[in-house]
Length: 160
Image 1: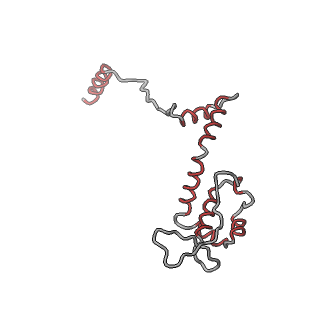
Image 2 (image 1 turned 30 degrees about the horizontal axis):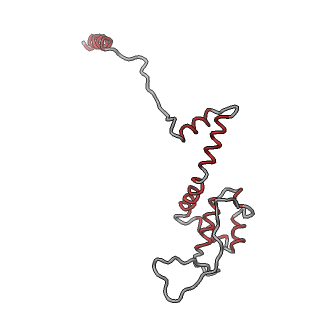
Image 3 (image 1 turned 30 degrees about the vertical axis):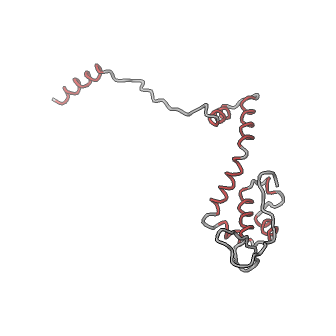
């Protein structure tokens, strides 16, 4: 796996005696009884947000299921959950924000190298706030007050 995207390590839970406080979050790791697997779900969200190159040897959902010992149907159920794709989007956004410097550097190199593409230069300048799209409406045939009066007189004759 590449830098930047970290998958949570599987660490055994330390069980405290008594009831957990409302502010304590527990990581649940139970197998085969239908209870949520919070750490695995978070790892699956992060894995889903990764590019194929970053996933390493865990390329497919089935690979993920085997490595994390989670049923493939559980992964499918998680994917169809209400907020799953919002969580994936947040994870991607968080990751890609860390890549802005690299992207800007690549755009800069593209804009200053041989065979500069206009679109690259435009994107770069927009990103640094030096270019803004504008549209200008040009009236090539403005009507002067004299011309308006002529038209008014001509149409007045038709009305009679």
